Amino acid sequence: MTRTVTVQMEPQAAPIDIDRTAVIIIDMQRDFLQPGGFGESLGNDVSKLQRAVEPCQKVLAVARELGMLVIHTREGHLPDLTDLHPFKLQRPGSSHAGLIGTEGPMGRIMVRGEVGHDIVPELYPKPGEPVIDKPGKGSFSSTALECILRAKDISTLLVCGVTTEICVNSTIREANDRGFFCICIGDCCASYFDEFHEMTLKMMKAQGGILAYVTDSKSICDSLKSLSS
Amino acid sequence: MTRTVTVQMEPQAAPIDIDRTAVIIIDMQRDFLQPGGFGESLGNDVSKLQRAVEPCQKVLAVARELGMLVIHTREGHLPDLTDLHPFKLQRPGSSHAGLIGTEGPMGRIMVRGEVGHDIVPELYPKPGEPVIDKPGKGSFSSTALECILRAKDISTLLVCGVTTEICVNSTIREANDRGFFCICIGDCCASYFDEFHEMTLKMMKAQGGILAYVTDSKSICDSLKSLSS
Image (tube, rainbow over all chains, first blue to last red; front, side, top):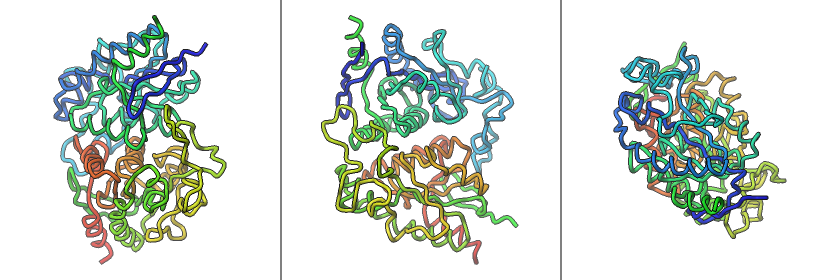
């Protein structure tokens, strides 16, 4: 039996098949959300990302209850930094030495296995939920994400995480070009820059939803809960 | 002998090696720039993209004089539409039939081989310049672009074209994740939406140039011309 619900979204409501829909939570790592990590070291106010945590918890709870596929991603590099491109470590013309791989209060910055690299406790993956470690901004580049989604016959992605304009945006673009229907849950995403967050959502849903549809955690949870009742 | 020039950019000036730098001109097609094509059929004012043509001509002229690699891209589909994802043809929940592949005044919309699909005469590729036909927004997805860039030992991309927030932005994200240093030439890009153009450039160069550096055609041409004199 198909489990299909209609979700209120912009630019328009549309049906989604729950059994072909995955929730993907992008980069909700200490390195971006907590003081002392990569985000703060770039000069950002990391407290601005906290607002996405509670909406993500709500969506995760409903998705898990319905047995939906939940995938998490983490941006970071191998301890020997062999997967770190030179232009990412040190931006051209910059007099600053590269930060990635250096010691910080949560371990080596943006390095896999370190405390700062891991996902915040409030959104920690459950056993069996795939965790995608990625060296770039997009979640498809140099990862097995597409393989997992095809293996599970997924057609639709509910996208959450940080930051809206960088890793969420890149992942949605990669997914859209691969034929996935992307739904960005706006309040489950956050940015260090309010105007970037707002404008990214506006760009995604422009021209008839050229990159993605946009909704909020309440609309998604209301629609999903109608199935479990 | 290495041919290196310093280019004035934001967030900072940086050197580029001309022999490892390619110019990439994204989707300067009739379908997006001229009346009767795909862009106008989505309700956009296509005259807004004209502003990028003359700056692109200037950059192309200098790049060709220096013997730099110049690459063009075109978004479009095979005549049988086998490379068109269902969600791209018809957006979910939409009551409108899909436009791609239907007959328009410049031939079938967004179909390879049709008049509307080709590049505008002012920026037409010279013999020997690779033309990348792509089914998506990003120029790396489902194309040989990365293969060509690696074969030519390219490290740096000067990115021009339309639209700033969609295909230029997606291509820069794909390139950045693959380790290329991306320089977006702002006035060589254009959008149907002024605020999307401006905000996209601002997002790219934020946080130390997290996705790309941004410059203009005069700065690039001045730097490049210093080599030929």
